[in-house]
Image (cartoon, rainbow, N blue to C red; front, side, top):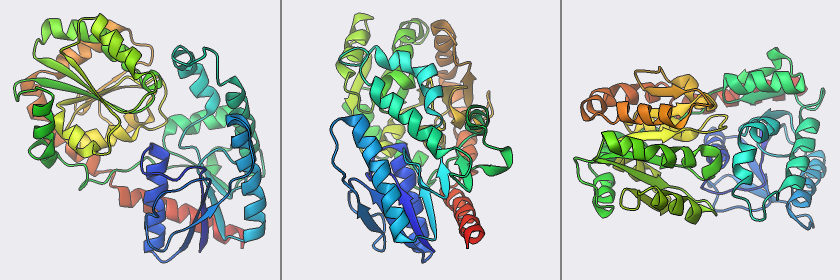
Length: 382
């Protein structure tokens, strides 16, 4: 097949970007002709993958988004691909994947928290309005042959918000590379990273990893941590990931007396090593259609505490692989969960079980499932 994978940004950081690279590599390896349609890109994920770069004139973020979607429409009309797979904010596709979920749900559940950290406050309203307009156009009747969601949570949402029929939605949970994310990193780079932070083997290291701190609930973790320390004096917090407001979060931690307890490492590209430095992964997200870090942590042998606003929680068995807290759980509930799951004996006893949970969601199987959908869409249009 001649396949177009459409996303404005090709990079090697970010959840959608990781999916784009993994699928492009998989499809090219099977002999398909793969073109990534984008504004910007890094090195191709496979020697056979090509780029179609579209950079229409724009001023400001909202116009940039809209102009790219218009350029994609013109490009795919002229290029005659067998199937076009939309992964971002565009409306010209045969198959669309809602890796970011429904934008209004994001605004309802995480928007207020994110606005608190915007400069100036209230910024981004035009971009949000444009995102909603593109989403409506992308999901109107006749605009797609198939919708892929990465969680049942998102399937229910897109059916309710956009009237997409259930039979036109395929749920394919995210996958993980079990060789890249592996408990062996505890004895390799993870041990070195722990030492560089001043952690000893006796410390219980709670890891938060992700960009977009407000949406992913880092403020909740910080606010709950003093109560954790009161019961677990050897608990430590390790924060990995980029956020433009990181200094405000670090100041918040210091204000709560966590200056020598919480370590902020910023953005890094060695996520497997970071998981290797942790004992417990915590992500009390306000909205994540499926946080890749859920499976990455499990594959690395870390139990996970997350919220029911994370579609990734669907792969977990609460009590065996960690805990799934209600979206609106208060600070004490989160603190109690971290206290319970930083028990050293419990951490050691569940490591093999959480690893086996992740192994059931091998990345290759998910790429095979997506390929089946793309082939069916192409056959239905021929």
